[in-house]
Amino acid sequence: MPARASTVRGREFGAGVRAVVDSTGMSHRAIAELLGWDPQKLSDLLTGKGGVSEIDFARLLGLCRVTEEEFDHLMALLKVSREKGWWQFYGADLPIQLRTLFEHEDVAKEIVSWHLALVPGLLQLPEYMRPLIRQWPTIKKPEQVEQRVKARVERQRVLGERRNFTFYVHQQALQLPVGGESVWRDQLHHLLRMSVRPYIHIRVVPTAIGAHPGTMGEFKVMKFEKLSPIVYLETNNSCIFLEDKATLDLYTNILTALDAVALDAEGSRRLITDIVS
Image (cartoon, rainbow, N blue to C red):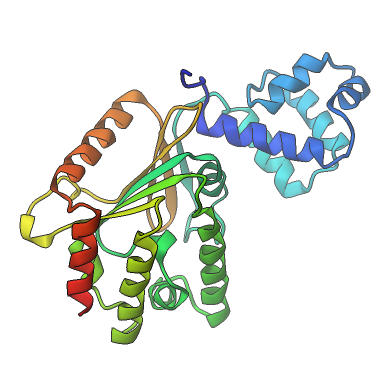
């Protein structure tokens, strides 16, 4: 089935509208009647198409009694729901929860990512996370560390048999002794345990190959059943979602090149075992 025309912003908009509408406990038809709308008008909103005035949309949100924060979020998305690509800038630091990323990971059928400096976040142990988070210049209190560790562990619920994961990891990321030798060894043993799951594929790019296609930085590609893939990039204080064809072709070519130089699954397990021995 061909990919459905959609955007990252539009999908988040539609999901958000659906959530607030469903929270009322009323049928979609009943809500449309209360607003004096054709049912199709509400249906278009629920699929992220927009197509209503700000006044009409505000009436819907008022009827659903949304919070001020959600009102502002959805009103902002209404204006841009059909625009491709999304740079989410957060100022001083990334928030504890990355709403757009989590929602797309939840519905992806396949997630392929490249990791140059650290063990993949979805495969990190809490003991590995803590020393990393403590190094963030904006983290000042122990409770802030624990909040972020908890959020990252909760995010790992996305790991499961409903989707496939391929993690390309540079050897240098495996050799960085985050948290000290004991934590580092536990983390590598955790990778070995996770790598035998049939839906998790860990492919190591050896240091010995020298220059490689991933030197420009880390990224993630999420693929879906009925939607076009998206590329995800992350910085210290922003997230970028890219969905234009030129970008998708570029990162697909990088993944193809990484696949050519990475060890296979068994070879990767042997290398990890050698490192931790």
